[in-house]
Length: 215
Image (tube, rainbow, N blue to C red; front, top):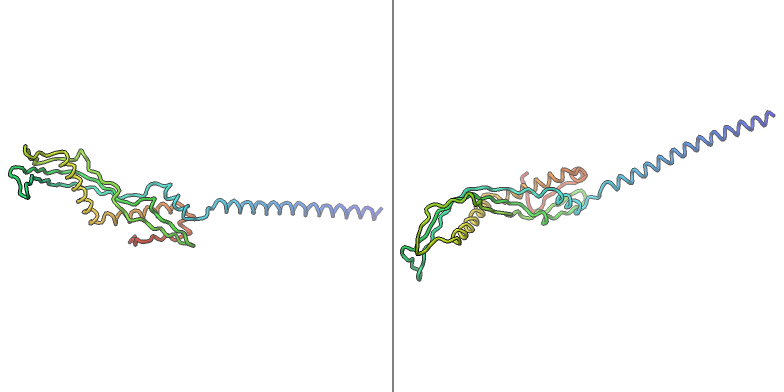
């Protein structure tokens, strides 16, 4: 009887030990499974940083900021009829015009080239250009307009004159550094866009090519 009772106790203890080890194994197995799934999901959630990924994030954000250039200008128009290089008397016409204009200069997002190499992002910005230039019609004032019946002022005179004046003002704005300022502003804007994505900005060095900004 004693031996049978001893064997029964040993069997119970062995079963209890086996049951404990089984529970530990199951817990360990599910822990490993959870760790594997979590790691897999984390890798899936973190996108691979590629040129197309950065391009899409730039394009899906607001347009690249442009620099506005507002001005007021005065211009004088003069014209006279000519015959074989000689000015016909009393055929001169003229007017003075003042107007307000506004230009916008910047870059085209579609022309940005991006290359990811290792821990560096190379961004090649296109040269900035004047994107728009308008004269506010309600600001136009005409002074000293001649009333020459032999050579009357026409609508085309005003149109051609304002076109020529716009070209002069664009040249002046460019000489005063408008496009350089627009290029710097575009660079700043792209940096600010990428700063919104820590996975890009904190892990990569951003290098702008073909334009050495002082900022």
